[in-house]
Length: 562
Image 1 (cartoon, one colour):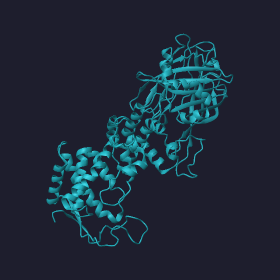
Image 2 (cartoon, helix red, strand yellow; image 1 turned 90 degrees about the horizontal axis):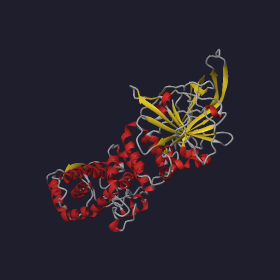
Image 3 (tube, one colour; image 1 turned 135 degrees about the horizontal axis):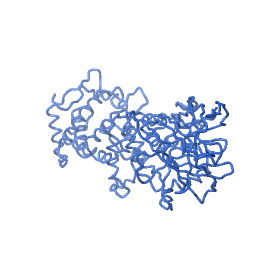
Image 4 (tube, one colour; image 1 turned 90 degrees about the vertical axis):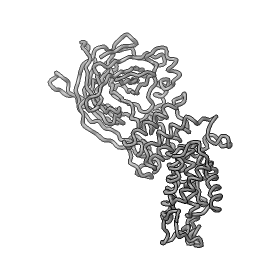
């Protein structure tokens, strides 16, 4: 064990052997003293809990005051020695309560890489309101199954002196195993509604359909290390864990500690929170959307789905790289990521996140889509503005945007602005070609194909296809033939636009689409009863725009050359 006190005195950790995640356990551990005829004694109550920092900081203002400087990037830059030039991870905190002190452990982040080293910051508070602080660097390697193996014997512990704290002066240089114990370790599983910990107020099972947080307990061995008055070397331990650094999927064993404040401390390694947990906390899902709602649960489920792992990583990385000087993300960025998740989930497409993120660099407050038309910045996240100013419907029916279209507009505002601008030219060119913008006829077939040919050529084929698919996502069952017709004609238009040169004129695209009409590559519906009194509205209902559009049992999809 390597230990130092700002380069001088040595101290050592004591480690409870089981690696915990969201753990909340309190019980008396029964210990057996080595070389003492197996006599047992009570270790006393130990409470080990790993919970969300967002929750802990609301309940423990004193702790926030003690560690706040380690969350501030400017304070880190101003640090006078390298030992204190670090930031604390803001996702989780491990709390260990014993009969003689309470300690708090955080994951340490540095501005430089520390390969195969897990670094923790630990603050101990004693009953007399004195403190100790340590940095603990755990070397680790991966075994053949990808599990993390911590090298406790060679962990390096640095004691931090801090003028803002009243520090204990005593320390211990020699540690050895003083006891082995057995006891329950209870792991808390966060609720699915809003990520609550056990004991938090939660509406799951009361007013919301979600699973509340619960405890899962196992009987485990515990190795205790303590201070030896006769000297000796530090004890070590072994540990296993998940290679993804998700502590909920690993376990570990390590050194333990003495019973007196000066003897040492319990130092259970705290790995970084999983990427999925980091993303959930950045989005603050429960508070922003409302705990227990279907929308909130859908976001949680999508993030937890391992098949979305790459997208979760990309979206978390996007938010990580776009934090402000206080380590926070803007509402704009959070809205963007939320929209990407929703549309990725709805369209079941694993490329949306990467594509959407790639376009964010072209948007700023001084250069954004719609600026020249006096659209306000961030209009794409203003649902009222979008509803009043963006119309992607081509069929002469006053329809609201579909949910998928709204999410796409928030995720791809530049493309949404282009596609919205192409709607009028599509309708104008259709009237020039056919003298009418009809419904379910050849003019309708041309309009859809020409519109989407322009969209693929101007906004990119992949994103243009997202929008055309989203537009058909809420079509009622009585228009199923109309949906099939539109999807086919949209596809032909996408192919024409995608295959054309980027510099092609709209007129050339119109000529190509019209030729497709003549060649029978597009389709329309026949026969259509345009005299049907229920054409626009079903007179037997109070709904608007729920007519049959002239479709009857005899209506068929036929090529446009017939």
